[in-house]
Length: 408
Image 1 (cartoon, one colour):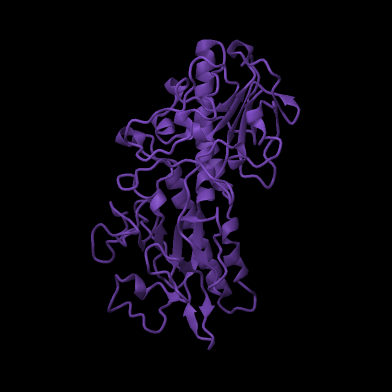
Image 2 (cartoon, rainbow, N blue to C red):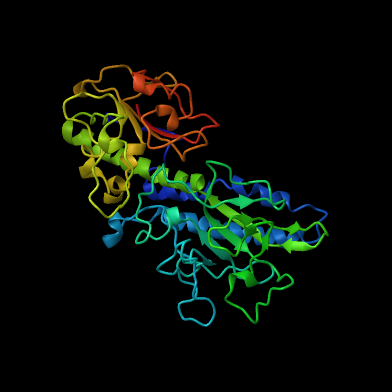
């Protein structure tokens, strides 16, 4: 507005496409640090493992990119950005091998299979031993024809991964996985890949109550040895946490919300009032993204100045997937606009803003959602007292997974 540049933390690129590319290139790979640590210089297989690790990371980035751009076109317009493809369960000799299956679930044991490289639009990936990659997907993020619940910042992963010692949980509360990618390596004693070329147990290992060949796990990262020094797990694993996947989705959702706010302001000469934080449509979960969804909305009378994103008022500028997945109800929104009855000074780190809009990141341990308590969404102390009307906010700190967009 008025020729001023929109402020964002961090600042955006000029287009959504460029922003998405930057997000993918900058995707945090911290979760896989445990794998890097296994590549000790004294290990004669270090180079081979490093090459396998790089292949696993290619698969991880492809899956995240595929999921983040879902839901925009045609009959898929009400579907869920964040949906991951089902695994490939066709295996060898089938013309459809390499494509994602149309159906998958942990309950049916079909949420585990080979990486669907054709569906991802990439070359067939193999580990350093020449074996194709395997892949498991959480029920929370699978095919929306089967798992119809909304995907937004409140969505949790369900898959657990343990370290090679069998007792250290690499996925504590708040870090559960939305997907796991396996490099099976060479066969261990008892695995006959010629006789049983399509059996997961011919490739993926089990030890100490963890089973990489079982849909839903829990899984164990190799390499691991038993008390006698025998190699019992050689699967190398990379996981995608719900937090990592949602981070990219939130960038997209914030961009969508920002466009809708601009359109509303252009059409009405002011920004829309926030929806109350405790409005009924803002505090419930969405069980089916393909059904009619009650929008997160205000009462049309009370001039709320800090609450949640008003999906009803901004609807004309929003893609269908935004409200169908309840993105407004997980976003925190505040305005300084006298035309909307909100004249209180609003700032981020002391700099005046016309509006602030937070995406809260995946819920951390101790955060419970949906909720009417702001600390269940935001981490920084300056931001968690917002429901009281405090107009002073801060850009998310280094320890926060919140994302902020603002208009000066």
